[in-house]
Length: 131
Image (cartoon, rainbow, N blue to C red; front, side, top):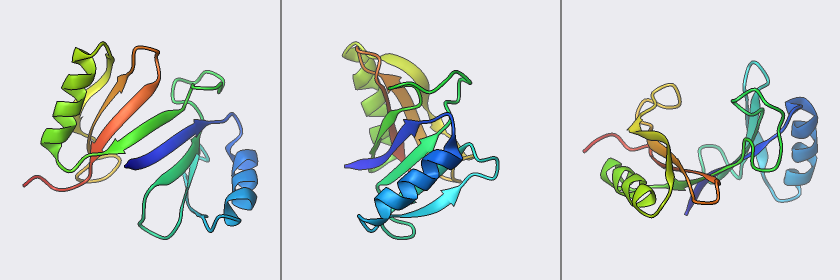
């Protein structure tokens, strides 16, 4: 059901050390640390999901509960990404990034971003090639 969860932090190295220790108990290991130390991610085994990511907020403001946090949902295809985004807007959500390719994440990364009526940031993604 979930693709990944992001949590905000102002100090990725400190937070990564904490999550390395805590998540090891659950059998999760760090699989990525961005070269600029802006984010790090964990999963159960290589190339599996869901992931947990910690990240400095992209807007440059200090991390706070909800700032940098996002829940992402896996979609079976690109049409589903578009349908979820449209349904979110129709139900009172607001657009945070229309459906489209984001090849800087992955060659076939097709996603959309939106907020629920309470302002929680959500994302839907399909990683499969078109077809």
